[in-house]
Length: 173
Image (cartoon, rainbow, N blue to C red):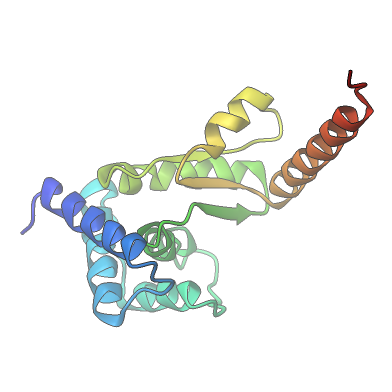
């Protein structure tokens, strides 16, 4: 059984290797290792161990496929696999839910899995201030609802466009 430090080192080493080699896809052997680490960490940190079908669902999601699951079949837990796989590739991950309640609940619920591996996790909410959202977006993983991500993106694009207009309108000497 590997210690927490050994698991963190394995994930960190894999991440550094993938970033250094500029790889865009996880190799099959590493996909298995990362999925196993995620399963082990989940069991240790929140007491939930992925079923084989949940690991398959997580890998399917990582590959961009659709994995249909009914209520209670563990979609929230399944998502930890593609999230950590994408983290290893050096990507920041935004997990989109249908409402603020699920974004907050799932971020808090799965947070110990990510924290165990020194991966930062947060959530965005409609009632957060800009400062709170900026802090949340600095995390490796951000949970939020579809409207918040969309409108935050539009706010940023609008702010950049407005700033460019203001710079162009500023008289120069």
